[in-house]
Amino acid sequence: MARTISEIYDEIVSVKNGTSELDGLLPLNESSQTFLDAQSSGSKVALWRLWCWIFATVCWLQEVMLDKHKEEVALKMSHTPYGTIPWYHKIVLAFQLGYELEWNEERNQYLYSDTSSPAAVESRIIKRAAVTFANGQLVFKVAKITAGVPAALDNAELSSVHAYLTEMAYPGTNIVLISEMADDLRLDVTFYFDPLVLNPDGSSITDSSVYPVNDAVNAFIQSLPFNGRMTLQKLVDAMQAVPGISDLVLNAAEYRYGNLDYLPTGREYLPFAGHMVLDSANSNFNYTPYV
Image (tube, rainbow, N blue to C red):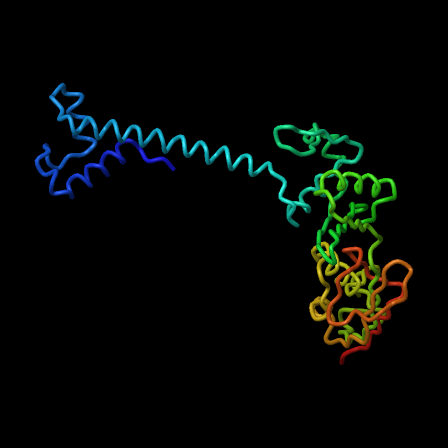
């Protein structure tokens, strides 16, 4: 940030006062304020003081111009495509279904002409995204939101997103676009429950339509970041925290995506689709009274 003329002047005088060869220059204990007071009073001002003020003014102008130059460079850099993973993540979330890209000469990249109208905002259908780089491929996992949960894009939407990414990406980038139905999570758990709180089928005594463990598992899954890893220990903690659950044994945890067979999750699991759901119909929750 540019210094003021007075600050520069005082620094010059400070250097002058520390140089014994210049001791003859009066007045002593000079400052920018005493110089300005002398100017306004009409008193004669030593020539060296005038030159110091002129030089301070020139330095101030130079620093102001340098600050402006920095601002211009920073602005251009903010508009420059980087090709980094965070940049690609930002780009894919900015996709607008049904809108044409236009080349912007000033910013040297494709842009949408309308990004703020209600229709433009509504057209940004990608609500969840993750970008990774593996085996020479830039992998995009994307999802829209349907009924409050992540959902796969349809074929027409996927085709449009792929065309958009091809335009926006650096030439030669190998793009892989994934948007699938949620991976399934199948659990086999033995719960030891408090009969004062839960029914033998796992429902709540106060409301038999509510199954607290199922709700807790679904809430845990939905709380995971998109394309975040699901760890079994944290899943067990979420089930253990359910009121009425005294203890539990996790017998098995398995996953599948698409029409593939179920496989063990291991200690943690990274969903292929980037998101997952509990397969309640095929999960096995056994409830044993803990008395």
